Image (tube, rainbow, N blue to C red; front, side):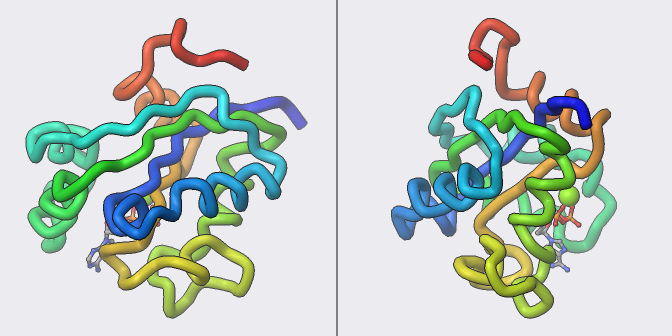
Length: 140
Ligand code: DAT
Ligand code: MG
């Protein structure tokens, strides 16, 4: 299996509760390595651009307002099968459906305030990494 990179974000509900370290530890314990990280308080416009794929969804306004409501931590994760591995440790979108041992089971408050984002495919991982990081800021 090849070494892959994926994009991860610790959302405002989690930074507010000081869970950055606890969530990062769960990612690291799953075999993922943080190769870039920064804390960002995104604007509404940045949230709308980042989540443009969801712009027709009924929850788009709620989602983008939430993402701009407080600090987030944006990260690049590296490891074997990193995209799928990160999705596995994140758990299901709705915490009610998330498996034991996942980040969303442990910390998510609702389907909207669900603590973490993770890329869902190689193409989105590439786009989402490039949205927040220059190649020189990623140190593998
Ligand atoms: P995921 O974050 O698991 O990839 P997604 O891409 O379908 O899920 O949706 C992006 C985010 O939008 C999700 O993390 C939280 C929010 N969201 C999704 N479905 C929602 C809903 N029914 N009501 C409110 N927010 C929702
Ligand atoms: Mg998604």
